[in-house]
Length: 286
Image (cartoon, rainbow, N blue to C red; front, side, top):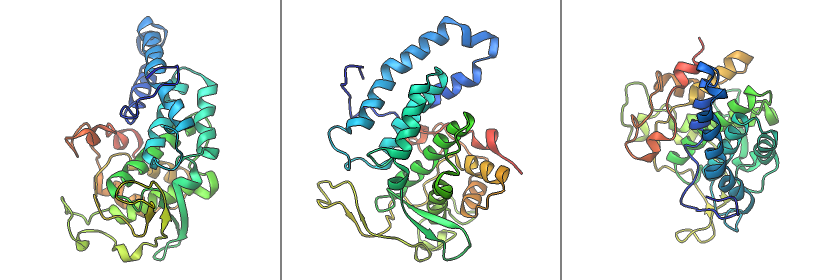
């Protein structure tokens, strides 16, 4: 990716935020943050990833409704993490302003496109932009959004609480549909899950027309990949417990995965490396 506005749609930034996060954790170790290696790594992140991520959020390869939430979140987390690492307020603002006002699915209102009172509890749940697609991507959206909100929180911007905790409500919705029963390693049928699909409200919507769905109408809750395991749920639970905010289904998912793993433990393909899997280690709170 280059700063002249060119962007390669095949090279997206799903795992980029892990580099700045790791560097930030090591910043004060043996004066690493003052070293030439640190400065070179910062320059590399900006040159190779920031410009393309920023261009994607602006142009989306000349469309605004083709790309699902996970694409926006990949670029948003990349920009925010690089901005924090390099102490660049403009980049930080770019990512957070996009969350609040962006043209694509990373806009919080499009990310969690319908909000409901949960029929089984007294909490709110919110349908995800990818709920009518598949659950492998939905679970990715939940944990990427958690990482994005946690990074923002670390610098004083509480996006977990934004719009009456809308992003937590989205994570609750995704967790309710995807958490297997205790002891179920590879869920299959409806009975392998904590909650039946019939207990989850759903509203049809139009997004991302493609060759298989030329109108982009998503008429039902996607069942593909249901029960996909992705680390990172402990981030939400840490926030909820610390701030006295009630969560239900996030708790179940975090407990099911605890201690969470990563680096290919859940999926030997690229999806297994989207998160390093250290949310239990870093965020578990009794």
